Structures are given as structure tokens and as C-alpha cells.
Image (cartoon, rainbow, N blue to C red; front, side):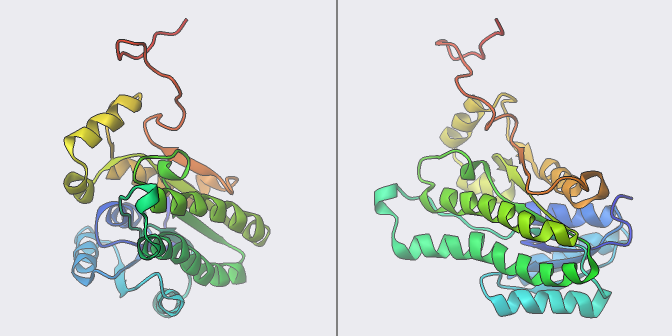
Length: 262
């Protein structure tokens, strides 16, 4: 088991990618603190972990509130005595054209995706540096690397998460805490099954060399790698898990097929 005796805090753990990461980390021996505002979803996550013999607790948390982030870590220390891993999954998004983005919409997305990541990383980081060990894994996005229509707030927030990851890696690395990020491409989750229509899906698939959406399990595997000892020399890295989307430029001929190598 790759995370035996580690204590991992996972935000956004009530569903989707966060739930998948929490369950996978538990399978690899970590004690889990599942955090989210969705208490019903948290209960499902904890039950799923316990059903497989794992250990987990839930902490209702609004990551946009610094006091909530601090309380989340305090409860972790109170229950398990330490915090070894933090995965910042909690996030939100809203589609709007650049000229139509309102201050309220932009602020809401930035508060969850950027400020929430900052507040939780600060709270966990303060405890990690005391022991000289820690793994912080942020969830960024391909939208933070490449622009997309309707992604003014979301893309900007995820680009900022990438910058925040590198800044934290610089300052916390000398104190034994690595900070990295997973940058998912489009992932098949309960949310995207509702919010992504067929046109959106085909658009993505036409620009992804693997021609498909990723799975929750694939993103969880990437997070597991960064959270474990196999990635002990990785710091400030953005691990894109996207089927090749970010890596490609002009990838097709005029007929719409993947161009052969010449």
C-alpha cells in the first residue's frame, strides 16, 4: 500500500473526482478526512471507505472561509494527530463569454477555485512544516493552460492555481513539503454528464489524441502518484492527465484525421 499510515485530507470529497481520490487513497492505506459542504455526499464517501475496511471521517467545510479551512485541519490533528497529505479538489465553474462575465460570477469562481486552494494549503502547510514532511496536490485544469470559449473565470482561476502551486513549491520545498498539481482534461463525471452536451463532447474528442474523456480513476491515479513517495523529487510540477490535449498543436489533416508521422 503506497500511503500506509498517512493521513490525507481531501476537499470536494462528496462526489466525482474528490470522492474517487478519497476512496483510492483509502485503498492504499491512508486515513481519510473527507471535506465538502455536501454532508450527504460526504456520508456516502465515508461509508464507501469504511465498507472496504478503511478509516475515514467527514468534516463539513466551506473552503472559501479561512476559518473553515483552519478548523478542517484542526479536526484532522485532533483525530489523527497529523496531516501528511492535502488534495485540493473543491472547485466550481460557470460558462460565460468574456464581455459578459459579471464581477459577481467572476468573484464566485475565484473564491472557490483559487482562494479555497490557498486557504486550505496554508492551513495544512502550517502543520506540515512543523514535522518537516507533507504532500500538497492541487487540482488545476487544462483550462489553466489553454483558453476555451466561455471559460473566462474558470480558466483564469485554474491558471492562477498553477501559479500558486509553483509559488508554494518554492517556499515550502525547503521545509520538506512538496506542492504539485494534476491538470485534468475533460473527465466523465456525474457533473459533466449533465453539463456537457454532445457538441461539447465531440469538440473535445476531436482535439484529444486518445479520442475520449478521462475517467475519475485515471485522475485519482495521477493524484496518488504525486501524493506518494514515488514522486518525492517532484515539486512545482503540473501533471496534465488529458489524453494529450495540452501537448498537441495542429494534429489533423484537412480531412479531419490524425496526421501520419513524416
